[in-house]
Image (cartoon, rainbow, N blue to C red):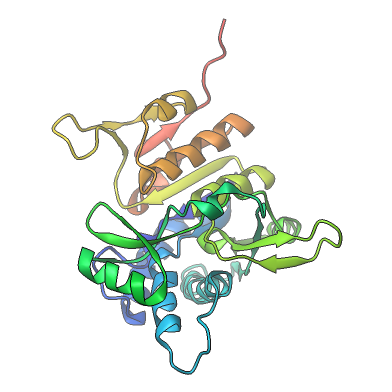
Amino acid sequence: MRILVALGGNALLHRGERPDAAVQRANIDRVATAIAALAIDHEVVITHGNGPQIGLLAVESASDPALSAPYPLDLLGAQTQGMIGSLLLRTLYNTLPGHRVAALVTHTLVRADDPAFHHPTKFVGQVYPRQTAQLLARRHGWRIAQDSTGWRRVVASPLPERIVETDTIHELLAGGTLVICAGGGGVPVVADRDSGELSGVEAVVDKDLTAALLAEDLKADFLLVLTDVPNVYEDYGTPRQRPLHDATPTSLRRGAFPAGSMGPKTEAAARFVERTGGLAAIGSLDAAYEMLHGRAGTLVRPDLPVG
């Protein structure tokens, strides 16, 4: 079976933790344990979030007096792909002796006229108190918005159209390689209409939507979306909260889940299942193996045919 595993940003850096390299190295052991159980018997592709890491690099770049201008988000995204990919590769290489592992910096094609460039919604970086966030916004020219626990920077998040390196990923999988790719949704690029030349854009592509697109293009059998809660919940955070164990694309879309948290995950699972007829599951990293076998998480199945 071919499985695409989409790791949430919390896999390396939990909310509220210091963004130190040592903290992220320690957290990666949980990831390796979960993935190794899948990789023994299946083809595995791993994508990952980068929200905390790209936010940290953006602050450092904007504050660096040696720079005449901060590094753009596309290059910061490439940096986080390299850093997180290296952490994952080393740990998985040690956990799966004799297994081929490759970390690939990948690029995601988006449309230059995507309306998302005029309406930033993607949260990146740390959570701040309102006054601190407003100060940083004035200082660096950022846009900010309220997250569930504070205020964060928001950036443009255009829809992914195609992953440029899909054919290369196919070839690596055919050679028995576990592939780490499309980190943070991939480096966002646009193509010139006449020449086809690629150039980076100031954005962060949603990692879950990129994962769903990549899983479809790779003809994956299963999309596994790993996050920090055991299930998708209806009425999350209210007295009526209850876990969803089984769902379909239609039922997930009726749930109207928040755009800043569970919404992209449920939409990614719905798109993959609708377009491929495969299965998806959303749940906790530590339950990845159980989710694959339908014993944990929220399993997303195709809608039953009407009539």
